[in-house]
Image (cartoon, one colour):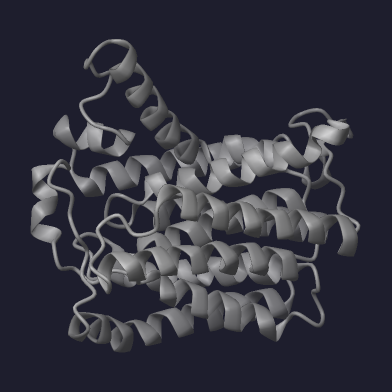
Length: 322
C-alpha cells in the first residue's frame, strides 16, 4: 500500500471528523432538521428535527482529499464527478425540502432529469477521455467479459441509476447506509490496489470520510446524511464498478442496496395487483425488520456483516488478486 493511499484515508477522516462538531451546530441553528414521514415507523417520530444534509461532510472530505492526488491519479476524475454530481442533486433536493419547506423536494421528473444528465456526462467522459471499456468482468470466470455492444450505454444508465437509488433507499436507519458503504469502499480499495487500477485515492477518501461521518451518524444519530450523502455514495459505488469493469460485482457487494430497492418495487407492484395487500410490513426492507421487533443497531449490524461476507465472496471471483 502506497503512502498516498494511507494519507487519503487519514486526511479524509480528519476533515470529516473535525468538521462535524462545527457543521452540526450550524445545521441546528439554521433549523435544517429532518422531516419524519407520519406513515413511517412510529419510533422514528422522535428523530424529527435531527439535523440533515450531513452528507456535506462526506462530499467536502472526499472532494478535497481526491483533488490532492488528482495529478498523479487522473482516473479518480470520473469517480469524483459522478460522486459530486449526484451529491449536488441530493443537496438541491434536501435544500428544497428543508429550507424551502417543500416536503417532496425536487419532483420525480426533475430528479430523474438531473440523474440522467449526470450519468450521460459520465458515460461520455468514459468513452472519450479514458481507455476504460464498457465490457464487464464476469465473476468467477477468469478473463471472461460481457459486452453488449450498442446496448452498453443503456445498460450503464440502468446500473448507475439503480445503484444510486438503491443506496438512497438504504439510508433509512442511523448508520445503515454509511456502515454498509464503508465496507463496499474498502472492497473497492483492496481490488484497486490489487489490480493497480489507479483509483485507490478516491476509494480511500470515501472510506475515511465515512469513518469520520459515522462518529456522528451511528445510533442515536446526531446528524443524517440526507439525499446529499446517499445519492453521492450511490454515484461513487456505480462509478467504481465501471472504472474497474466490475458493474456485475455491484450486485454482489451491494446486495443490501439490491434487496432494499427490490423490496420497494415488489411491495408497490403487489399492492397494486392484489388490491391493497402487502408482502412486507413496510418497505424498504429495513423497516419491515423494525416492525418485526429488531432494533436499529441490530439491523445495521446484520446488514453490515452480510455486506462484509459478500465482499469476501466477491474477492474469490477476481482472478487478478487471487
